[in-house]
Length: 211
Image: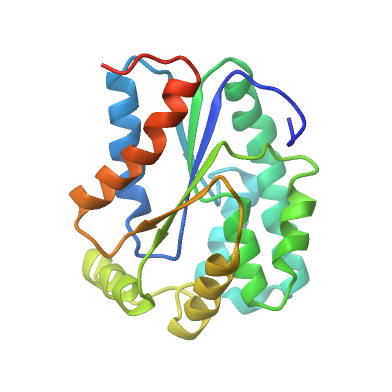
């Protein structure tokens, strides 16, 4: 189910640097959609699957793999994710909401020196193209402060300030019609209102009646 294939479900992705509030907004959107009677599957990357567990081990020791090995691991995790969860859910008409997808790989590995557009192209040979990407944008300093305040711990190896600035620059450069940029420096309520304004047209286009 790549860009040229039809499906009955919706694929909505949350993207952005760490500390932009993605997890909170995923929960708010999933709850709102369920209240509308929609079947919703929420998920995240890296996954809790076999490859995702290996990626999570890198959070405290990213230097344990080469950049090429790290990229390959993210790709393997996504193949597993698509096969085991995303594709089956979309085929049965469910709304899939994921906290991160291949745009994060493009941004984080792009910041490490790989070509972001090539990463996206390689992913789209097997991964469904989203109906909507909600790209939450906030200054790096704000994101890091939120991380430290909410977790009360130091940022992991993927959350260092210099790296996040490069990641943010890659996200900023991404251009797709389905990428909707949301100012995540606002309050949770304001961010949620902006997100709902982007998602509502998707529902009406699919003939879903909103209460």
